[in-house]
Image (spheres, one colour):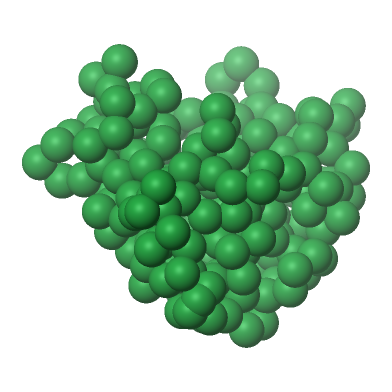
Length: 218
């Protein structure tokens, strides 16, 4: 499609869940983080619109949002380390995250599923997630939900590497769902420094070209 070619050229010129849960569930027992950036138009088109998710409000279309910051092992990952009664996320903490995680339910889910495995309290965990999110530059062609078209996963990856020179090809993975851009996942050390992650990288999208839907996609 014409729009797809244009977007792919912009990406190149501008330059033009992970694995399976592991058995161990001890909080703070992990090797690194995966920063998951979700392409909101795809989430909304495939899931969010049907359930009326706040993230998909037409009054404020979104591009990349923070899906989560996930503690990860070299193989597999811990999950739900808080048991059946994890610490509650304070309302103030939830409210402060809504600019980059635009759903109260998402914030709570990410804490229960992943944050409880970080060894941090809710406020410290989400402060860490915000720092990780803020240190990644989004390529200009993907900064708004108006970006619609198609590109190869490699073009998208290269666009991120262009504006984030500290990242490496072995530390970033572009994922897809039903032929559409789903997420960009970036591996960071426990001190939020870019690092390689073979297992995450192997799970990247293998399609030749994927659609990048705009906010109006259904």
